Length: 293
Image 1 (cartoon, helix red, strand yellow):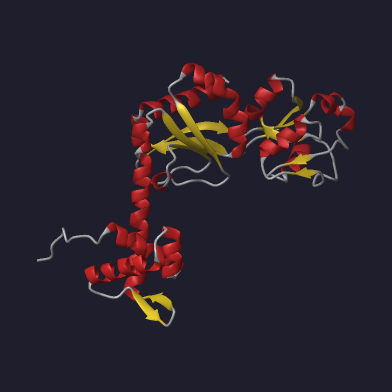
Image 2 (tube, rainbow, N blue to C red):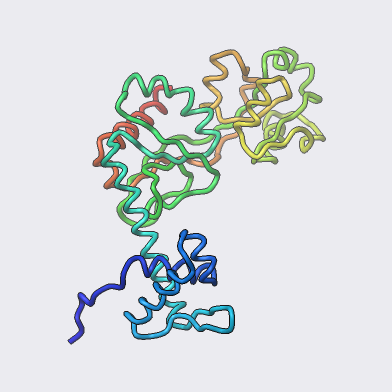
C-alpha cells in the first residue's frame, strides 16, 4: 500500500534544484542563492538520492534536465510560489490595517490620491498600499487584496461590485478653455491610451476636424491630464476622475458632449478578504465615494 505521507524532500534541496533547473547552471544557481557551487551540487545529489532517480544529465561542463527533472521543475516552481505567497499573506496578521490595492495608474493619481485625506479622516487605522498597472492581476496568485478592473471575475470565491462606467469628456486648462469656441478646430490635442477617441468626440459633437491624430501622445490618462493642466492642449478624461481638478479650477469642461459606453470598472476581491476589518472598511469606503463624490 502506498504511503500518502511519504516524506517530502528537504525544502533547501528543492530551492537549489529549482534555481539550477530554471537557470540551466549550477554555478548561476549558486550565485543567485549566495551559495557555493559545491553546496548546490550537494543539494541536487541529496534530492536525487531521495527520489532515487537522476534529475540532471551531466554533459561535459553543462547540465541538462532529464524528463523527470523537467516534470519536477514545474511542480517545484508552483509549490515554492505558493509558499512565497502564503508567507507574504502573513503580513496581514502583523499589520492588520494594511490593504494592498491594485488599480490603473489614472485611477491612482486622479481618483484615490485626492481622496486620501478623507480616507485617513474616516478610517485612520486603514493603511492602503497602492500599486498601479495597466494589466489585470490574478488575486488568487498575488498579494493584492483588492483590484479595480474591467474584467468580470471568473470562478467561485470572488466578490465584485460595480464601481464606475467610463464617461469621457473634453477638458483644458483655464487659459485654453476661455478661447475654446474660437479655437476648437486648431487647439492642440493631447492623446492617451485611447488614440481614436478624439475623432469619436468631434463626430459626437457634430464638428469636423481633419487632424485628430496629431498632438501630444501619452500612454496613460493621468499624464495626459497633467499636460492639459499645464496648458499644453485639450485632453479627454473620465468625468469622475476629472472632478477634483475641475473643482480646483485647474481644468474646465469644454462641452456637454461626452463619450459613453466605455468600460464598466468593478472592485474585485476574494470573499475571504472581506472578513478582514481593514479590507471591508476600504471596500465600503471606495463604493461610498463613487456615489457621493
